[in-house]
Image 1 (cartoon, rainbow, N blue to C red):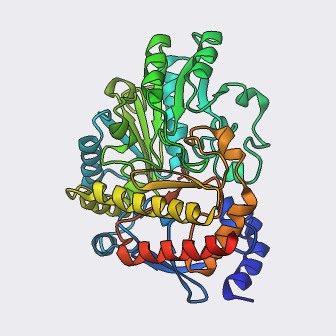
Image 2 (cartoon, rainbow, N blue to C red):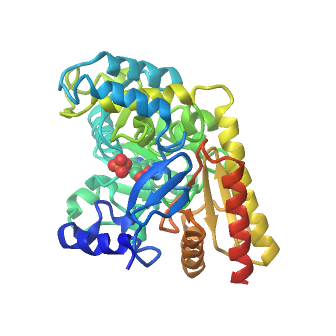
Length: 428
Ligand code: PLP
C-alpha cells in the first residue's frame, strides 16, 4: 500500500468518507485519493514523495502557482501581528478598494470566509432588496452548498449523482427555479410564468462545475435584459472565474454588468475567503446600514486579507492575463491535436485560465449541460489514471474544469503534451 492509501484508510475511520469535501474522495474516477504534503510552483507532492504537475491549483485560486514567494513572505510577516482580531483593520479597507478598482460593477463589497457564504449572502440580500422569494439558477451550475442553491447543482453534487440533496425541505427547494444554461428561451419562459416573484438570476458566467462551458454569444447580455424587464437582480457568481478569466472577471471579459457579484478562492490567494459586492444601493441594504442580516466572526481575517492582497497585486502585472490565456490555449489545443492524431474523440473548451476536456463524439461547440452528461466517462477515468501515472494531476471528476497557473512554464506544458500523446497512442 502507498502512504496515501494508508492515510485514506485511517482517515475514513474519523472523517466521513475520509475527506472534508466530497470530490476529493475520487468517487468520480475510482481508486484512492492522493494525500498532499506540499506544493510549489506548478507542482504538488504527495505523501509518497511523488511529484505531479498540478492542473487543479486548489480548485482555482493558485493562479500564480503554489507557494508564491511574495504571498508566503507577506503571510509570514502578517502572522507576527496576530491571527484574528474580530475588529476592523486597514487591510480590509485596502482589500475592498482593490476589488472595487478591478471590477467596475462593484461599488461596495463585504468579505466572508467561503464561496458558499458569498452566494448564500448574496441571495438573501437579493431577496430582501426585491422583497421576492424565488430565485433562478441553471442546471449544472454549482454555487456552494446553501440549501437554496443545492438544487440541480454541479461539481461534487453532480459527481455523486445527487445534484439535489436530501435534507433540503421541499418548501425551500420550490423557491429555486432552474433553467437551461445558454438557453435564453428557457429563462424567459420561467419569468413569464413567474413575472413578479423572482428576486434574482444567479449563474456562473463560465460554467466551471459541469466541466468548462463558456457562455454563448449574447447569453449574458440577454440575462441582463430579462432581469431589467422583470425587475430582478443579476447575480454573477465569479467564485471560480473572478480574476482567473480576466483581471475584471468573466464579466469584464464578456462585457456584462451584474447587480451583484460573488467572489471566493482567488481573492484569498489560497486562504479561506469569499466576498460579495455590487451596486451601492443594494449593498447598503445589509446590516448594519440595512435590514438584511449578514455577519461573520472571521470575515476579513487579517492573514487571509494579506494573502489575497499580495496575490491581487501580483495579478495586476501588465500582460499576465494574456500570458495565462496563451498557456491555457497551448495545453488545450495541444491535447486536442494529440487526440485527433490518434483518433480519440475529444472536444475542448478554454477561456482565460480555465479549460475543459470532453471525451465525446460530439464535434459541435460544447455549450450545454446535456452535451456534458453524454460524455464517455470510461474514457475519462482511464485518461485520468494514466495522467496520474505520468505525474500529472487533474481534478478527479469529468465535471470539473482544468486550471492553469503562471508557474506552468514551457517544460511543464511540453511534458504534459508528450504524456498525453503517449496515453492517447496507447488508448487507440
Ligand atoms: N460558486 C462557485 C462558482 C464555485 O465553483 C464554488 C466552489 O467550487 C462555490 C461557489 C462555493 O465555494 P466554497 O467551496 O468556497 O464554499
